[in-house]
Every structure is written in C-alpha cells, then in structure tokens.
Length: 306
Image 1: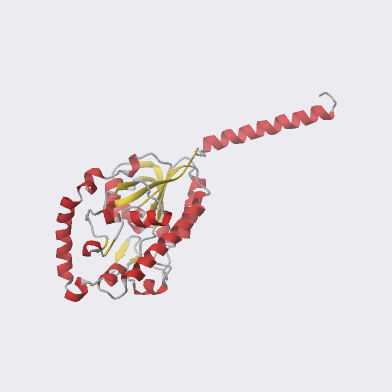
Image 2: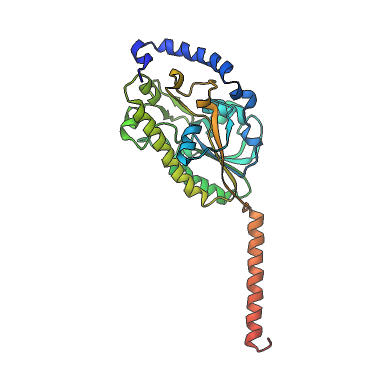
C-alpha cells in the first residue's frame, strides 16, 4: 500500500484528516454511534475477559467463526473506561494489566475507585524489556483473585493484543509506545509508537499485522489457562480495536467511531454453574455428610448388624 503520509511528510495534515474522519464516521457509520454502545457493567456475566485493542475481525478469524459483537463506548481505553465506570461497581474486582485502570489513575479520572478492589498488575507485573505487562502476569493475578474473592465478578484486563507486539523482538525495539511511569500513573512518551512507525512506512504493514495477530495468539493461550479456574458465565470482549491503514488511518484515535475501532467481540467462552463461597460450603457439608454415612455403614457391616 502506498502510504500518503510518508509521501507528504505532514503530520499536521494527518491530524487534520483524523478530525475530518471523525465527522465522516458519524455520518457513514451511524449504527456504531455511542447511542448504541454497550455498558459492560449492566450486562449479564460473572467474569469479563478484556483483550485490549482486539479487533472483531482478528478475533473471529482466529476462531474461524462469526462471533457475537457489540458496540464499544470508546475508541481508546480512557474513553472506554469513562463510558463504563462512572457509577459504583462494588461487585467487581478489576485485574488491571493496563495503567489506564490503575488505582491512582482511576482516582484522577473519577475522584474515587469505582470497584470493590483493583489489582494493579501493571505495577508489579511490568516488564521494562517488553514495555508492557506480559499476559501470564495477569493470569496469575486473576487466579489469585478468584480464590480470594469468590463472590465477586472479575474483569480481567490483558494488555494484549495491544502493542508492543512482544512475539517480535524487532517490533518491540522500534516501538517507543507508552512507558511505565515512576509516579504510579502514566507517562506518555513523545516518541514513535508502532502505529506511527507503520504510518510512516518504516516497517512493512504486513509485518506489523503479523505481530498484532501473534499478540492475540499469545494472550488467548493465557485465557485458556485462566478458564480452567473459572466457573459461571465468562465473556471475552475488547475495549476498542485498531486501524491498520483502513481509511488511511492507524492506531486508535480518540472518539473515532468506525467499525475497525468500536465493533468488538462479545463472545461467551464459558457458561457453567458458578462456584460461589456459599456453594462451596454446601458441597463441602454434603461431602462430609456423605463420608459420615459411609463410615457408619462400614461400622455396622463390621459388627454384623447389616
């Protein structure tokens, strides 16, 4: 694909084009307006698996099937967070692999923490080499939270398939991205993230797309591991997608409502009776009663009374 932004070299022109594209999208993609966006906390689920920046078509292609979808409330994480969590969410424990959902950042956004508990995996699980939180760190934190908060709903927020594309060391190297900050929030680095690198043509788009899809493969492997520990209704979804050159746009600009950004999977990946603390207690009681009855029968048999 010939890259017009590389040819023109006008970053300012690109920013103006995105402003135009926002207006165009409001007219062209009316069914993806915020009026049709899902409020995730109002939906029926026990656990929500959040795959950051996962495009609907990527997810469906990986499963080789059309899965249900919904309209996201944001085209980037901060906008999505503000759309969904303005009210109280005290029945939810949030496993935050993304700094936008960090405790301190939530307080800056809402003036409080809306959730029962936030597990700041972005803090203790951050990899300076990968410039992100590896998915296995989120999985481990989620398993611990399942055991500690058996009666709460969990939102498990993986950073992948969002860049950096950690399966490709060269793509990680050229991706400045958003770095981990020392003040417990976010540090936006004014350098070239992977989508800007791709926009300028410095890395072939097919290699970027390959890294993007491999990131999805990596995180879905961790999701499979996590599902072994989950009961109830579990839904996989995303906060937003990405433009990968469609409509001459890249990445996920704020408030741009195109299907590449706000059409997200809403896929029930597990639906079995939920194991709450009350149910565990009942099953343990039933098991003890059964064992007691068995012991009594064995004693009666040994005495020749039955």
